[in-house]
Image (cartoon, rainbow over all chains, first blue to last red; front, side, top):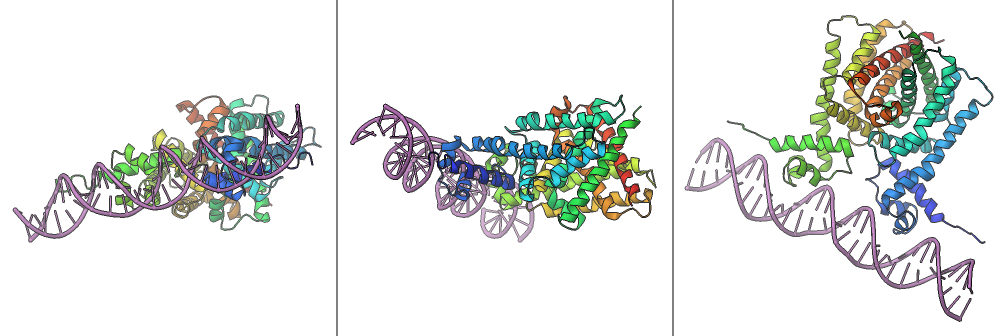
Length: 214
Length: 214
DNA sequence: TTGACATTCAAACGTTCGTTTTATACAAAC
DNA sequence: GTTTGTATAAAACGAACGTTTGAATGTCAA
């Protein structure tokens, strides 16, 4: 083989780093723990990524962004055969893409946990998360929904609605342990369906608030 | 004076520990940083609290719970002269209690950040947060709202609505930097008013989804 | 004044951390 | 065959960590 395994170690480190950073947080994970889980040498992190923070940013650039792309693709594929999707179709597609989409339960949790960490404790990755992901996705959602709203709909209020819907969806993902305790049962398939249903109908009704401004 | 300052050091440590734990997270803060900010000796933490984790739990028990109590009091005082408050009055009071209530901007941020950290990365304080605060508060909100809903309203769906409204409200607090970037301006008084208005109207409309179940 | 107790302090404990260094293995290039 | 470059390995670095120790200080009752 010419290129047998160019960089298997690097990929294994990224995998384990994403998992551990998501579960425990940046400071709570040591390089030794990551390289141990990745079956590689301690110095491999510094060889492939320079230092720990660069590995953290690498997780976002080479893993997290990829997951984001898959969620977005799933979202648009749900609307592919609908040239002019209705609002409930858009909202439903978004809820399904996040809660029942292309990611496994574990992947989805890690994905949102990493994002969550940057949102509540802004670090070096927040700018990228907002500018490269949240801003364009928010705008796409607005553009899909706006044709179905009154022409004089306030742009600022529409933005707040989109943020609310996404925030609600994220909340049901990363606060899963608390939600389970509050609801009295865990996240089985039936409950996930109920969640998607709830988010869709609640958000759909919430959006009607836009039609009643003075 | 008989009891001049029984334990001033202990209180200063709790103050600084809450601030630093909220801003940086548990693992990112060292005992040396806390005692330095509190102008006390390094060993004071271990003398007054035993160890670092006990100090963290102490922050929740002796600071965070107190803040929760003040928010709840503010909420109920808004409804004090209304024996049978309407749904918009309840929702509005909740949004104001969280976003414009008795806490300073800094206090509110720290309060929600601490809570947020436990929700997204469950630790030893999550059980207390959910059982002593979220469960009773959720129930009180449900009891206030239910009289104004159809009698056959599904209890489970109502719970989901309450969680959604609280989640939305929390989201606008702890994700403030991201929201600012998405909205294009910062959290001044005018924007906070707009937020309260938005949350109230969006949640009110969202609740109407409960009336249309099969 | 003495004794007992509570609190503060400086110093050190052993451990773990991120990072660096040095050496080794192995491929392709000359 | 030698050189060059890439990847992994073991060992060590100084710094910072949480925690413990034992002496010093202050307070109040006897």
